[in-house]
Image (cartoon, rainbow, N blue to C red):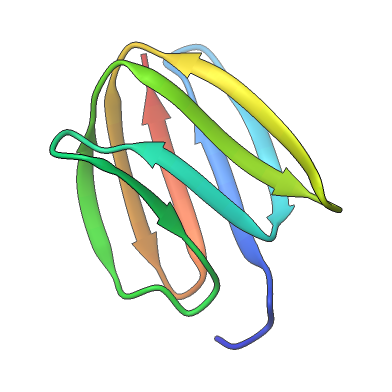
Length: 82
């Protein structure tokens, strides 16, 4: 922890959509949207329909999702989406 980056993995039922290092991730949580920064506490969250966003080299990347879940642990975010 404390590296200033987060490992992000975005998985769909068919394939890995993204795997790499990012500076932050914004997710449409079931109760409210939330942002994951380096050093974030461990969490598992359901995701609702919305847009997830991540930042690579100060450039935002976005994808619309229908739902899924996310796990945050040790500066790694794993997102399973529909």
